[in-house]
Length: 593
Image 1 (spheres, one colour):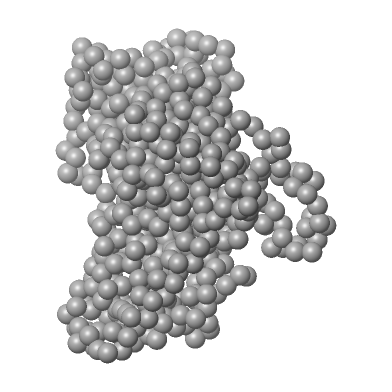
Image 2 (cartoon, helix red, strand yellow; image 1 turned 90 degrees about the vertical axis):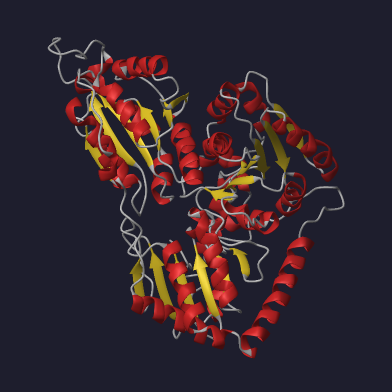
């Protein structure tokens, strides 16, 4: 029986719980391809699902979406240096979004004259032989390692996955030339009990006491969260904290996960680092958050007590980052919130039952009611029947299934989207983890594959800006959707170009020359606009549903059709032509969509 290093590589993935491998294959993968065929023939389903991805960024975005939704590691295989470069901004997103993904790339063969199986056989093997391939992605990865021999290939895979799955989680990169990946081995297995990720860390007892007492004694306590909802169980613990300390409010300044439900009175919504609550709070708990506020736009009072709890409080991959926190803790958010709740319920229950907290709760309920009424009033249609993002998203919320998972990449429109969607279920809102636009096409496919394979087969809706939609490589996304029967609803927010660069310009030069000219003159206009849904339909071989809506009447007719198509198993792309507000919420995460 032939048992190569490449076959052992796939065995190691399966044994470690990796169920999907998103591939873009090349001349460095003969033994990989042989191992795939052998595994599919011999393993009787005990072998990872192979998903062919015509574009590398889509491949990694799919793995990212799957891993982000399930918390389970996934694998991507790409082709030498050029395939590694093809991953593009998806590596940045996986790193910033802390997605546990193992990337494997081949290397050009290092023997020329046939000395070993796998020696160079093609012209391109010289051209793609580069000095240090890992440096293309190393600064974004938690670990990089070369497979130099097949004899420890399973150990290398599990070492990489140990990094990927230990906080702060993120992508890892393995690479190996054809010769070691072709190596014949005696079959072997590892004892996986020795290869577990690092256990989550907790707050020290003094930290629990200090934070709990500060929140209870505050006049206006505030929690600022960013990605606590990555662990779905942490959502309930944050709700428990808000229930225990009545009057405490929760602001999301990350938008990458559903951290706190919109139907709770303490919900302040999603704002990118600029909200009045930041300016007035006297105690702030920043928890699992990369950008709690943007100092030039908004910051706490000098007297505010700030506590920072994070799996990465130093933000080790950001050269410039600091908060005026009086205490900082490297700790898991779910564990920390559980500790805080236990302390409050054991030691401060009587104080928290006082009339002061009862009155704060009543005030909080009233302010929440008023907030929801204000949000509802923004979902309007003008005299010509045109609509903007608030109305569009109010209709999506009303018509899509209640347990829809929202894959969001709306950039300057994200605040409007979050206000109207009002997510309440853990895991039901997943935004791009970083600033590399184009995540949501592959991300939505990965989320849908995950919920169909391991979850409740939930409906998935991607809401994406028009510029971002083009970054997502729709020609690859909708081919994959059709090929593997992964139906998603895509709604393109068509505001005819990139608005984020204009916002960035006006924040620095509000009265400059650029403030006086058109989007065409700023070189951010997409007029005449592409046929976004037509691109997707062509990529699927004409199979998916495609439509355009410019008025509320058209939207009312077409949106139910699009949803019905997805529920029946065919993806749908609705190009929604927007009129109205252009991103009043600030802090766009990249170029725009």
